[in-house]
Image (cartoon, rainbow, N blue to C red; front, side, top):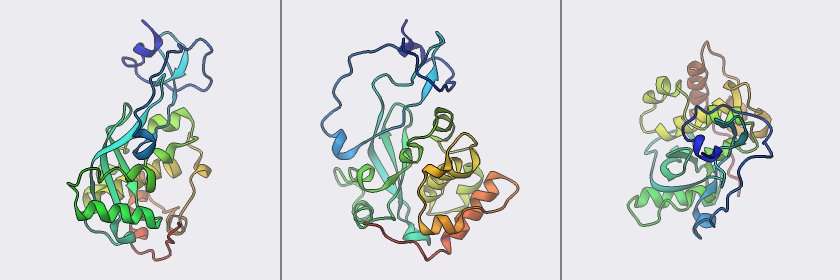
Amino acid sequence: MSSLVLLAFATLQPCNKESIECPRFPCPQPPPYVRERCEWSPNPLVIAADGMCCPEFACGDYSCPTQCNCDSTGNYEQGVFCGATSHSYSSNMSYFDCSQSAASRVCYANIVEDPSAAGCCDCLATTCRTSPSLLLGQPSQCILNCRSPPKYAEQVCPNYSGEQDLCTFYSMWSCVRTEEPSCNKSKLALSACEDACEGQQGDSAADRLDGFLRCLQNCTTAAVVD
């Protein structure tokens, strides 16, 4: 059995240097719509059952939003955050910050106007800041630990009615930026409000996330970048 198959059954352990013996398979061409409405997901190096250090997905992994919904309320940037089920091997949900450009705000507005419209989710991965993009350039350990919402989000996000996607997005952001030691936090560019609000004090990750979100809700310095 090849390393590629064994990865599906093994508990994933990160590694740092790809083995030259990793299997090389002919990879099919991605569907033509991938470039228009999907994004490539970070592909960590993991130890296969035969001990080799190989990419988790031999042919890569991409995330394509299919069904989406957006926050209905919110003080921070009018709540322009969305979540979507995605076609992806590594995760079945992605989250989107549509606050930081004019194009992303139009994407958000179109989804809210008619969330059942065909193709309404297609703009999310290409115009909004995405949760997979938070992990670009990060070490494999960071990718594995932060590509899904952390457990402490379960303590915080139920308190943010109408802002579940905002809370979940920023729980993953906080994993990369403040909570996971293996992550390189300098790789994340900060908005004005994120820069003003990070560094919240608290006895736990949940407390720090809650303090950060409360600060964001009162922030008025965020700039739209086109």
